Image (tube, rainbow, N blue to C red; front, side):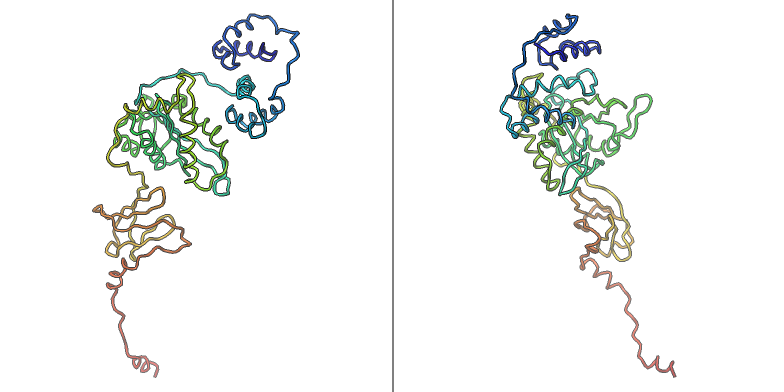
Length: 393
């Protein structure tokens, strides 16, 4: 028998237009029960005294987690186990389900994609402890539309280069590229939408699409629910992974934990709609993905620099040496996401490589590159000191 609160919740949700099947799922009961309670003019009274539950002592903790926007029943159940709870996870789930109506919901139509057709991409961010400091961590969420197979990658920024790197890593994780990539309207991918519906994509994103052979597709403005699969997964990462792990030594440590979590938790979860895991569905979708090209897309930062008279270039506040014969010329610089600096001549050949460092470490110099410069310096004229003695007389 449902409680008095459940009775009024059923009435309220029905008045709001919710379907009976959705109300039944939220309460964890049958559709027949929901219809029976809708037919009652008032809640039933005279219920027998409720027996004590193993969960009673832990309900204040669950309520506090809900206040902090932690809604994942599995995560809360694991925390309760650590505190001594010995009941089942079903009690936890049934206690949380009626409260989910407090969350803001947006109803939309589910769109199912064929295997290998679409990947949905989005960014999320969260404040967490990184290297002993509270920092904002950005994480890219990529999910295959058919299998719901996930890849997550954390980074310090959401710029174009990190967006492209996240997709390249996801393609390797999935074992192929989809025929279409659906993104939000971040500048890394979309420049603007015209009133006639034309989408103008970022040149770099188009180059990435051409390299891997996928069709770029953008959500309609003000409608991120178009990519609801990845939108939901952003919340899932926050409420599951970042509730399990709260301290990270570095981005490398964070991404290693993410890989472990993907393999053991996220891609092994049971999909209620299919009663299988994303990993199992991915095995069926993988043959439908496009083969990856022989080389990866170059996600390094691109820029140009003018070589000064002393054979140095300025990059992010410090100076780096290049061969003396390029003084006065324009060179191309490519900077990897792990701070490897490569300098190219206009002919495309590599002329210098450095590790990016703070200017407090001093200018980065290779003396051999400056030998030709010193040889070209005109010799200083030598004079006998007697010339100056005559002037002083």
